[in-house]
Structure formats: structure tokens, C-alpha cells
Image (tube, rainbow, N blue to C red; front, side):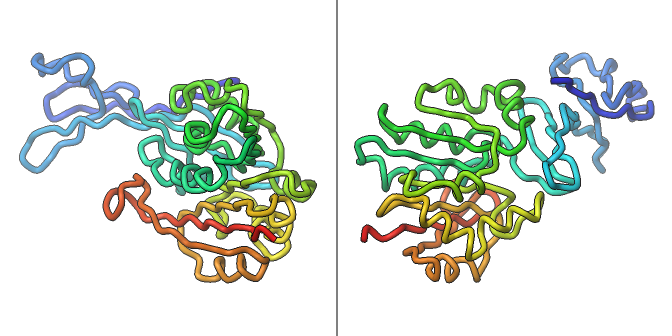
Length: 279
């Protein structure tokens, strides 16, 4: 993959007289600072300088059937994936993505060889969490529509998912999860959807088909009896739980912070756990 660097910034002077080159403020006149703290500087009202690491563009990717490009950006050890001005995911806030896996896999882990379908690889947090819960006989298929996202997970983001992509239980497919669900007949014990920020999508209009009445009926048919459909969303949707119930599911809505830490820490996300009745 060809990685692209961020744009150059105009040279400027710091309040200490040090030049700023390519967006980095060279603090050569502050000898007590170690070299690791050479970052872009911003002057505070008291005259002290706050050291800020600028975001760098690492790569971009087209979304099939979408408009704007995905952008992978890095700042120090942190990563973010954005679509326009919308942040789709961040390497520091992944508690709710892990909860998507742990809440749903806890309901199927006792089965002798559970089969799991994850829609959307993202930064790999949901996959990593699922593998921790499931036993050695589990089979996990991950459908990721954007090939670059898979390449990012194997490349600059590899440390985030650990050895998950190489786990023998895992099958990574560059495919549309909606098409895989439509073709399945009681093939999965759980389906986890972390696609396009939830029922109110951002990247592709066609993703709405995952969450409309027809898409939910397809998910119902793709699940085994007592199978679980788990859906992650960055925003609440008052109409979605009733839609799940109309499709035949027993639905539960769980509000969780982005960090996964109870009542504090990050934005509030929503996870729906919808269970197909055993009979």
C-alpha cells in the first residue's frame, strides 16, 4: 500500500524565537526538554507553551458506493479513522466496541462450536474481544467492505488487534456483510454489526438496508435458533428496537460509554442485543 503524508504547513516563529518547520515546532532554545517532546506548540495566556502533537495523514481509502474518502490519521501512538469531519473510530475509545463482542458472545460461548459473523473490521477491537470470550472450536468470519481497512489492520494498526487476524479461528473476507447475511440460512449463532455508525449511517446509503425491516428479517433467517444479533451505534434511535421486535426478535437496548466504563468516560453509545427465539 502507498502511504501518503500530510500537507506541509507554512514556517512560523514560536514565542521563544524557534522556527517551525513542516508543522513541527523546534524547541531548540528550551534545553531542559527531551527530544521526544519536539511537537507543534501553542502559546497559553500565561506565556507558557503547550506541546501538541499534530495529526498526520497516513492513508486514504475510497468507500465502494460512497462519496467522501476514509482517512487514517495518526498522532503519536493514537489513531483515528475519519469520514469528512466525522470520526468513525478512535484507538483510545474502544470500550463500547469491545462490549459489542463480550455482551453477545457471552450468550453463545457455551455452544460446542459457535459460529460468529462480524460486520466491519474497523480497528479490530470487536474481533479481539470476541476471541477472548470464545473457545478453540469457535469460527469467526469478519466481513469488511473496504480492502484498505484490512490492509491498515495488518499494517499501521497491527498492534491494536494483536494476533487476532492470524488466529486460526478467524476468516477475514473483503465482502459486503449484507450480501453474506442475505445468503445465509441459520448459518450463524451470532451476528455483530458495527457498520456505518449504526442504523443512522454515514458512509453508504446502501448500508441502511442492513437495518430496515427487510434487512432485519434477513438477519433473523441467517441466525440459528436462540441466535443473537448485536448492533452497535454511535447514536440512539428510538425506532430501532421496535423494528427489531417487529422482525421477530426479543430486543434489549444497552447504553454504554465509549470507554466502556459505566457512567463516565467518553460519549454515550448504544448496543442493541436482539435474540431470535429458540422456537
